[in-house]
Length: 350
Image (cartoon, rainbow, N blue to C red; front, top):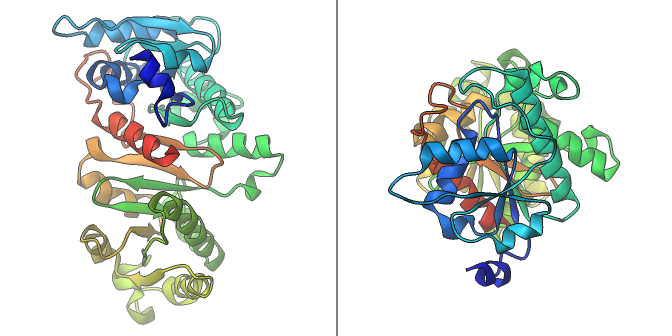
């Protein structure tokens, strides 16, 4: 098994899975993934804490299946791990085991440290992709500097990539895509208030989003994607009766994108465009703000959704759910979305 893992296509470099918030379900869904899908997890390793993973492995062991946790010191050692062994690379000293389900600054700092270590390894080319278990934004903020300045994974990864490239963050634009096997949505804005999100619906932001979606999704599909653009207002503004953002910002951005060879259409009424994309008329929908784009995908099943960060010089996917503090420590959390994120990462690095 270890020889196959080290020589098979897609396993030339390992995939790093970050711990997520140690007080949430991240550690146990990671352990479940190694337990339930050993072939998919071959060549993967966890950036986290050995004791935490051993505790989580104890929560999810079932049916006599052994789930050993082994500490490694460099990513390539994961390629030699036997099936259902959880390789863990610990980026810092051991930590006190947090109580499941409670917000903790220490857990937030550990989650951030794991992401920083894994992202820098990916930027150096030591790992082929990064799959991030969910972190808790309040815990991340409680950890203080530097993490308090980042609302979530996307913004932290953007800053690290810009730092690595030696450019300002503004020169490293990224977008969030949520996807499952029926629907893809890309967002113009991410973790901002609805008031600010509306202000961010500008011609330049919509055009930049279309360019990133065209390039990133096109690379995965090996062809130009068909992009539907949702309007901001009901009925896509109804010719200006319900708002002028479609006329003054969205439609001009679509026209400029089409002049560049991007297959973008719209703006369409937001209450029907997602159904049209699900029916295979389009490859993705560009949504104007966070909930507009994420609610349709999540309604189809949180366990199937995958979050992909577009625009980064590395592959990053994550589950389509949060830390689920109410389930933490019970062993009942569903690893389906994490497995979907791992499959997506495999596809993107092939």
